[in-house]
Image (tube, rainbow, N blue to C red):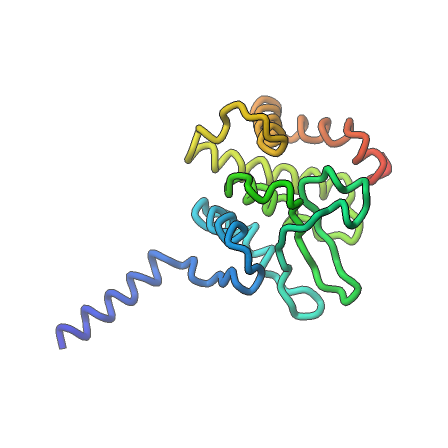
Length: 192
Protein backbone atom coordinates (compact mmCIF):
# COMPACT_ATOMS: atom_id res chain seq x y z
CA UNK A 1 0.00 0.00 0.00
CA UNK A 2 2.80 2.43 0.88
CA UNK A 3 4.49 1.75 -2.44
CA UNK A 4 1.29 2.63 -4.34
CA UNK A 5 1.03 5.94 -2.52
CA UNK A 6 4.65 6.73 -3.32
CA UNK A 7 4.13 5.90 -6.99
CA UNK A 8 0.96 8.01 -7.17
CA UNK A 9 2.74 10.93 -5.49
CA UNK A 10 5.71 10.56 -7.88
CA UNK A 11 3.43 10.61 -10.94
CA UNK A 12 1.49 13.62 -9.62
CA UNK A 13 4.74 15.44 -8.84
CA UNK A 14 6.02 14.87 -12.39
CA UNK A 15 2.83 16.29 -13.93
CA UNK A 16 2.95 19.36 -11.68
CA UNK A 17 6.66 20.08 -12.15
CA UNK A 18 6.91 19.22 -15.84
CA UNK A 19 3.78 20.38 -17.66
CA UNK A 20 5.90 20.90 -20.81
CA UNK A 21 5.32 17.31 -21.83
CA UNK A 22 2.19 18.58 -23.57
CA UNK A 23 4.32 19.78 -26.52
CA UNK A 24 5.47 17.07 -28.88
CA UNK A 25 8.04 18.87 -30.99
CA UNK A 26 8.23 15.98 -33.46
CA UNK A 27 4.81 17.03 -34.73
CA UNK A 28 6.25 20.27 -36.12
CA UNK A 29 9.88 19.52 -36.99
CA UNK A 30 12.41 16.77 -37.40
CA UNK A 31 15.42 19.09 -37.09
CA UNK A 32 17.36 18.80 -33.81
CA UNK A 33 18.47 22.47 -33.93
CA UNK A 34 14.86 23.60 -34.14
CA UNK A 35 13.87 21.21 -31.36
CA UNK A 36 16.59 22.85 -29.23
CA UNK A 37 15.14 26.29 -30.03
CA UNK A 38 11.64 25.12 -29.14
CA UNK A 39 13.05 23.79 -25.87
CA UNK A 40 14.39 27.28 -25.14
CA UNK A 41 10.87 28.66 -25.59
CA UNK A 42 9.60 26.02 -23.21
CA UNK A 43 12.36 26.59 -20.63
CA UNK A 44 11.81 30.36 -20.62
CA UNK A 45 8.07 29.99 -20.14
CA UNK A 46 7.16 31.28 -23.60
CA UNK A 47 4.05 29.18 -23.81
CA UNK A 48 2.26 31.82 -25.91
CA UNK A 49 4.72 31.28 -28.78
CA UNK A 50 4.49 27.52 -28.40
CA UNK A 51 0.71 27.63 -28.27
CA UNK A 52 0.66 29.67 -31.48
CA UNK A 53 2.90 27.11 -33.20
CA UNK A 54 0.77 24.25 -31.92
CA UNK A 55 -2.50 25.80 -33.11
CA UNK A 56 -3.78 23.69 -35.97
CA UNK A 57 -4.47 25.35 -39.30
CA UNK A 58 -7.64 25.09 -41.37
CA UNK A 59 -6.43 21.67 -42.59
CA UNK A 60 -6.17 20.49 -38.97
CA UNK A 61 -2.35 20.43 -39.22
CA UNK A 62 0.34 22.03 -37.14
CA UNK A 63 2.65 24.73 -38.46
CA UNK A 64 5.84 23.05 -39.65
CA UNK A 65 9.19 24.66 -38.83
CA UNK A 66 12.25 24.05 -40.97
CA UNK A 67 15.42 25.55 -42.34
CA UNK A 68 15.06 26.65 -45.95
CA UNK A 69 17.10 28.62 -48.47
CA UNK A 70 14.81 31.63 -48.68
CA UNK A 71 16.55 32.79 -51.85
CA UNK A 72 14.83 29.88 -53.58
CA UNK A 73 11.47 31.59 -52.99
CA UNK A 74 12.59 34.96 -54.28
CA UNK A 75 15.91 36.74 -54.65
CA UNK A 76 14.64 39.52 -52.37
CA UNK A 77 14.19 36.99 -49.53
CA UNK A 78 17.79 35.74 -49.75
CA UNK A 79 18.88 38.00 -46.87
CA UNK A 80 15.81 37.48 -44.68
CA UNK A 81 16.22 35.75 -41.36
CA UNK A 82 12.93 33.85 -41.43
CA UNK A 83 9.42 34.03 -42.77
CA UNK A 84 6.02 32.42 -42.54
CA UNK A 85 4.56 30.82 -45.61
CA UNK A 86 1.59 28.81 -46.74
CA UNK A 87 1.94 26.15 -49.43
CA UNK A 88 -0.51 25.38 -52.25
CA UNK A 89 -2.42 23.03 -49.94
CA UNK A 90 -2.96 25.67 -47.25
CA UNK A 91 -0.41 24.24 -44.83
CA UNK A 92 1.55 26.73 -42.74
CA UNK A 93 5.32 26.88 -42.39
CA UNK A 94 7.89 28.86 -40.50
CA UNK A 95 10.97 28.91 -42.70
CA UNK A 96 14.28 29.86 -41.12
CA UNK A 97 17.02 30.86 -43.53
CA UNK A 98 19.60 28.07 -43.82
CA UNK A 99 22.30 30.73 -43.30
CA UNK A 100 21.37 30.67 -39.61
CA UNK A 101 21.34 26.92 -39.10
CA UNK A 102 24.30 27.24 -36.71
CA UNK A 103 22.97 30.26 -34.83
CA UNK A 104 22.57 29.90 -31.08
CA UNK A 105 19.38 28.07 -30.18
CA UNK A 106 18.28 31.16 -28.25
CA UNK A 107 18.45 33.26 -31.43
CA UNK A 108 16.43 30.65 -33.29
CA UNK A 109 13.88 30.69 -30.47
CA UNK A 110 13.54 34.46 -30.89
CA UNK A 111 12.93 34.02 -34.64
CA UNK A 112 10.28 31.39 -33.93
CA UNK A 113 8.63 33.69 -31.37
CA UNK A 114 8.49 36.38 -34.06
CA UNK A 115 7.25 34.23 -36.93
CA UNK A 116 4.68 32.42 -34.81
CA UNK A 117 3.04 35.81 -34.20
CA UNK A 118 2.05 36.23 -37.85
CA UNK A 119 -1.56 35.27 -38.44
CA UNK A 120 -2.82 37.49 -41.24
CA UNK A 121 -2.50 36.43 -44.87
CA UNK A 122 -0.65 39.68 -45.42
CA UNK A 123 1.04 41.27 -42.42
CA UNK A 124 0.17 44.81 -41.46
CA UNK A 125 2.16 47.29 -39.39
CA UNK A 126 0.49 46.34 -36.09
CA UNK A 127 1.10 42.63 -36.63
CA UNK A 128 4.75 43.26 -37.52
CA UNK A 129 5.21 45.37 -34.39
CA UNK A 130 3.66 42.64 -32.20
CA UNK A 131 5.82 39.98 -33.86
CA UNK A 132 9.00 42.01 -33.38
CA UNK A 133 8.16 42.81 -29.76
CA UNK A 134 7.58 39.08 -29.13
CA UNK A 135 10.95 38.37 -30.74
CA UNK A 136 12.82 40.91 -28.63
CA UNK A 137 11.08 39.83 -25.42
CA UNK A 138 12.15 36.25 -26.11
CA UNK A 139 15.72 37.40 -26.81
CA UNK A 140 15.71 39.42 -23.57
CA UNK A 141 14.63 36.31 -21.63
CA UNK A 142 17.54 34.41 -23.14
CA UNK A 143 19.94 37.27 -22.35
CA UNK A 144 18.74 37.27 -18.74
CA UNK A 145 19.64 33.57 -18.52
CA UNK A 146 22.89 33.90 -20.49
CA UNK A 147 24.32 37.45 -20.79
CA UNK A 148 27.19 36.12 -22.93
CA UNK A 149 24.73 35.87 -25.84
CA UNK A 150 24.76 39.67 -26.01
CA UNK A 151 28.50 39.81 -26.56
CA UNK A 152 29.64 41.56 -29.71
CA UNK A 153 29.45 39.31 -32.69
CA UNK A 154 29.86 39.61 -36.44
CA UNK A 155 26.81 37.38 -36.93
CA UNK A 156 24.04 39.42 -38.60
CA UNK A 157 21.27 37.70 -36.65
CA UNK A 158 22.91 38.35 -33.28
CA UNK A 159 23.64 41.97 -34.26
CA UNK A 160 19.98 42.40 -35.18
CA UNK A 161 18.70 40.84 -31.97
CA UNK A 162 21.12 42.83 -29.80
CA UNK A 163 20.15 46.06 -31.59
CA UNK A 164 16.44 45.33 -31.15
CA UNK A 165 17.04 44.58 -27.48
CA UNK A 166 18.94 47.82 -26.98
CA UNK A 167 16.35 50.06 -28.63
CA UNK A 168 13.43 48.21 -27.02
CA UNK A 169 14.98 48.47 -23.56
CA UNK A 170 15.59 52.20 -24.10
CA UNK A 171 12.28 53.27 -25.65
CA UNK A 172 9.89 50.30 -25.73
CA UNK A 173 7.32 49.65 -28.44
CA UNK A 174 7.73 53.16 -29.90
CA UNK A 175 11.32 52.30 -30.84
CA UNK A 176 10.24 49.07 -32.52
CA UNK A 177 7.53 50.96 -34.40
CA UNK A 178 10.12 53.47 -35.69
CA UNK A 179 12.53 50.67 -36.61
CA UNK A 180 9.89 48.96 -38.75
CA UNK A 181 8.46 52.16 -40.24
CA UNK A 182 11.95 53.33 -41.30
CA UNK A 183 12.89 50.00 -42.90
CA UNK A 184 12.66 50.14 -46.74
CA UNK A 185 11.56 46.49 -46.95
CA UNK A 186 8.64 47.03 -44.59
CA UNK A 187 7.76 50.33 -46.25
CA UNK A 188 7.33 48.40 -49.48
CA UNK A 189 5.74 45.24 -48.02
CA UNK A 190 3.37 47.02 -45.66
CA UNK A 191 2.80 49.95 -48.01
CA UNK A 192 3.74 52.51 -45.35
